[in-house]
Length: 120
Image (cartoon, rainbow, N blue to C red; front, side, top):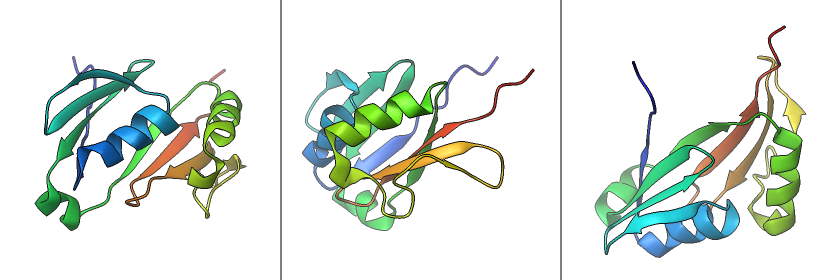
């Protein structure tokens, strides 16, 4: 019955979130006003909210699962190599069995890209 889990990510300035999600990660702007933007790509969606008060409380870490992590890494590292997370800039096999790499925005919101092994 559950279909999607859609996070709200708070920014002091909405343009900071749009720069990362649209310009760096390649999401499309589906809707926006002065304090809310809906971004989506390939079925993944996020709500970017302008709220300096809430942005000051937390900089989240999000995960996006993919079925082609090497293509995603090639695209994003070519577009914005400076945004690769210093602790996980390359695709790595993690102890829990997933391949992962991460991107970090200017406000320290972290997006981990993850591919689980195929189930045979």
